[in-house]
Image 1 (tube, protein in one colour):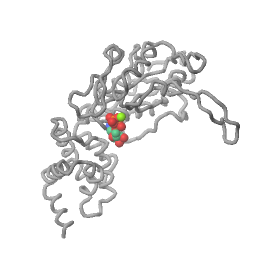
Image 2: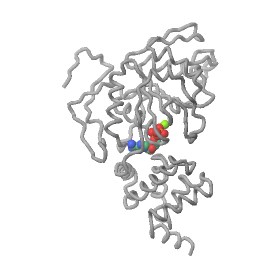
Image 3: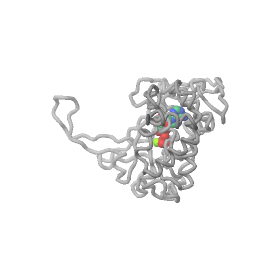
Image 4: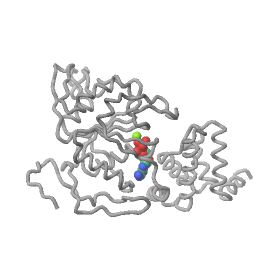
Amino acid sequence: MRVDNALAPEFKYFSAGIFSNVYDGEKRIEMPSSLQILGFSNENDPAIPQRHESYVFRREVLRDLLAFLRKPNGDALFITGPTGSGKTSAVNEVCARLNWPVEQMTLNNRFEFSQLTGHFTYAAQAPGEEPQMRFQYGPLAIAMRHGHVLVLNEFDLGDPGELAGLNDVLEGRPLVLAENAGEIIKPHPMFRVIVTGNSAGNGDASGRYAGVQQQNIAFLDRFRFLEVNYQEPKVEEELLAGLVPHMKPVLRGMVRLANEVRTLFSEGRISLTLSTRTLVRWAQIANDFRNSTNPLEYGLRRALLIRAEPEESQAIVNLCRTVFGDAWSAHEKDAQS
Ligand SMILES: Nc1ncnc2c1ncn2[C@@H]1O[C@H](COP(=O)(O)OP(=O)(O)O)[C@@H](O)[C@H]1O
Ligand SMILES: [Mg+2]
């Protein structure tokens, strides 16, 4: 075990045993407890993400995330992968266990760099007090000063021109708040930048994800990349079983259906997909209505089908008949009679 006498009291080493539910392929593994991971001692910072005990980690994703957090070597991290595959949540669940506060923002096509740095507002410090003009620091300024992780979601929806404002920061230079009398914020040694997106920054050639912008090549050169795809079917089943144990008998079919829909989506044959996020929602609604006639159909409608075009919805229902066989149609007959 590594003993670091110089460690400041605000930091703390955690044993890798804090990560349970780690899978290597389909196999569940134990993290070596001799592995020590640096985090923060204060567990009460309100910016620490919420922790979910049943969260399932993949070994490769965990390894890359921990390596980046420990020693970024001046890089930022770009996590790419399909929607709802566990990009944002993997970062949050890791930081939750290390007491590492996270500043988050989700970008869109109206994103402006000043949303990250801060702006003046006219507000009272406390209820009843005189309002005053004061500078409200943005997530980048806060993360740099206090050594938080800055997470920018749907990064590739941002305008490359606005994002270029991050260049200096990614180069390790201090942030200059011109609006706030040129205040200078030096990067804390624990400051990290992680971005997530459906593309890897180079636009979306398939046209499946609306609004994805091609990012500047020189800018992308400042990132290391991590790909987070959907879990192995067996693991996705385990993940769902952890959340809704009552649904165990049908989880295999649900995951199989999800993978069929994902294939159709990736082939460009339908315009929507069935992410892990949607699977969780489906399983939870079906579980809540498990005493009704066809809980699977009831849940799938509310989780996905209502927002699908009628033909696509029909195609997915047909897939359900194939995957669930008699179970699905038997319920349908009950429902009609
Ligand atoms: N490994 C996992 N273990 C448990 N739940 C997961 C996992 N991956 C994804 N999920 C579920 O899917 C949801 C969406 O994941 P998220 O990380 O937000 O996706 P995205 O890749 O779009 O950022 C989570 O809130 C959680 O419910
Ligand atoms: Mg996300």
